[in-house]
Image (tube, rainbow, N blue to C red; front, top):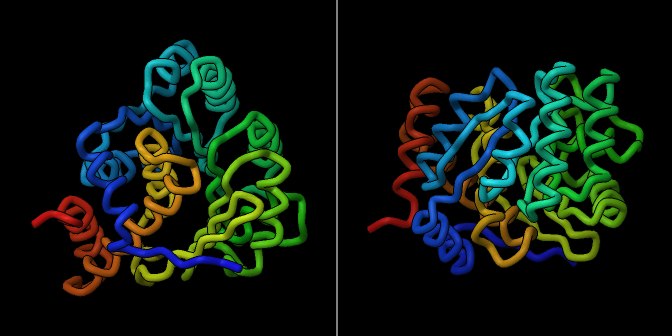
Length: 260
């Protein structure tokens, strides 16, 4: 049976305070479309973003960072090499990391790379329903980065993927569903405008990475990031005129969440 957690869950609030106190250095190997959005979301929440994509530097920096995000959204062969180096170094150093398998399923480079990396012990795998189905090898598939199924439809695949990889699997949707293979946590809330701006899902993966540095478990980290993003999205949408003003308000609400 699933449990439900959402802001202002006391454990989520405590993790957000810890994030702001520690400001974890979060190494983001992410796609070119969302780099600025991702950095701003991390800064607004209280983390310290860094993007170090060179293959010569990605590994050493992953060892120095508090957490790592690997997002395959606009992956090239050079990016893939840097990601492999960073993941290997993170494994050696014990740096927790998140895999975001953006748009896997239809294209061979990203699909093969994501499946290879999923076998290398990520702490969290975050994707939409179609991405999780494709990564698990189940029937499904999205339209580019957009999911064609909800998070509930991918829950069995997420459980199986968690059991196979040892990772917590977070399926984003109208209700985020997060599982370690046995437990399932549902995080409701948010707003449709989160799907109308570039990079909200990718930034959520980065936020999960940042929370890995302060939360007790990867499940707690994924839940905290989802709850924080959904709460900020709801608050930002309340005063937004459309996606442009929403994108700015989202950063403000992330920074204000839980403050007096």
